[in-house]
Image (cartoon, rainbow, N blue to C red):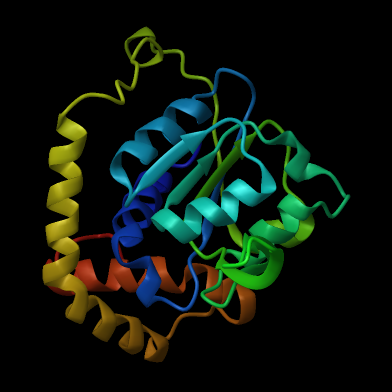
Length: 232
């Protein structure tokens, strides 16, 4: 990473996915950088640690909200260069709505009634879930306001450049179990911090506040748990 603070940001973001539904909004992470800068590797690593993490390099519009609706998944969408275009595609619209708890996609779903007649009904799907995006280019300007950008650069250290993320390694399940237990035990305290941090003297407001509120909450929580921690 170009900035070492990215390690703290990603750690807090990953842990927060285990209680994201309790927050009003949850920021996206956008990894940017040249080829071979490790974006896909970070995506795979994060998908192994996040709540119901799912990594994909290709996903349809409807699959985004259906997967979120069914699995409450933390989506990791890799190399999606179309997100940088100025054209407001349906995918970008779905993603723009999915950072906030109220985000949804409404569709007409077909079904067959008891007499065998095909009919339609209106169904609303939630689009709200943590999402990590990556690509060489930037993002749609609206999507940028919902994302924390983390620039990356290629490493010159062969030891790091040759590391692979083994997604079927059983250690990931062990770590996810520990994170889930942490979320169960820490939930009330984190929610208290979520309210208390609003009264802190922090010069952030409007959409920027909305984007960083969760991470500031978790940093504040860990500062209270370990006062010597330099994270907040």
